[in-house]
Amino acid sequence: MSEVAVQTSELWSALRHRTQARIGLGRAGSALPTRHRLELQAAHAAARDAVHSPFAPDLVAAGLTGMPTVRVRSAAPDRLTYLQRPDLGRRLDPTDRAHLPVGEWDVVFVVADGLSSRAVHEHAAAVVRETAARLPGGRRVAPVVLAEQARVALGDEVATAMGAAMVVVLIGERPGMSAADSLGAYLTYGPRPGGTTDADRNCLSNIRPPLGLSYEAAAGKLAELMGRAASLGLTGVALKDESDGPSSLEG
Picture 1 (tube, rainbow, N blue to C red):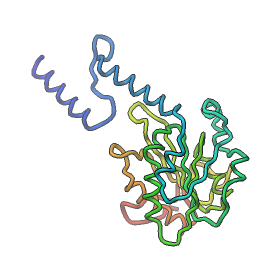
Picture 2: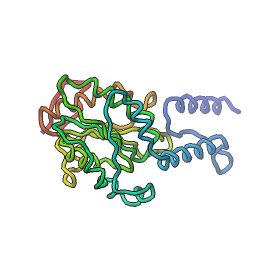
Picture 3: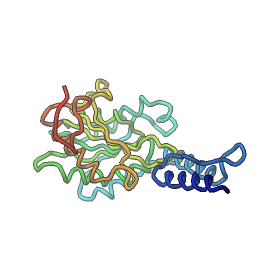
Picture 4: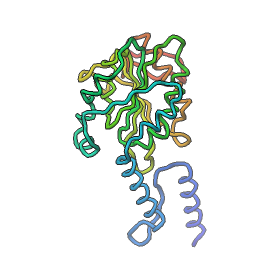
């Protein structure tokens, strides 16, 4: 191998250590080298497993020691229906809705399986605990809702049924070929079932230490956004994350 080829190989190797993107993989004839092809197949299998693995609410509840929980399901009766009918994942099962506790809550945390139960099992409980610990004294936190076959908008119906002013939905994000365990957090003030859009929410994505956002960073950003949302009475495109700088509201 020539000196230039060696230097090029070393450069690509150094770059690959700085990103999870698949770059500079080279080729073997007209295909990827065997090692990289096997890595790609393993990542694809991990993504499929993340989507289809069943939700284990007991596992999440065990990580929420001292915090009461309540379990609900969406209107999607099984995983296949959930994947084929996104609308059903946004609606509560009527029976479960009737069993939700009602109160004058400031916020309710909803832990939803989404498209990666793995992400929820590994990260959700820690984010809930860290965020709740940063809320000011006197903030009324509802029992944590563990939702199966759920999408983000299910939190709107949960919050409305329980009487919560805000909802934080922690949900497994769509797995990619470099991340099958990414957790998302969606904050909504004054949610309205069927009337709240994505523009009304604030989102934190890629919560998955050590390769993504840490629990502490996510909780700090969430708590800061929640405080300003309560003061201003809004979330979404008008409420910017200013946790790393001076607070401001863009009108």
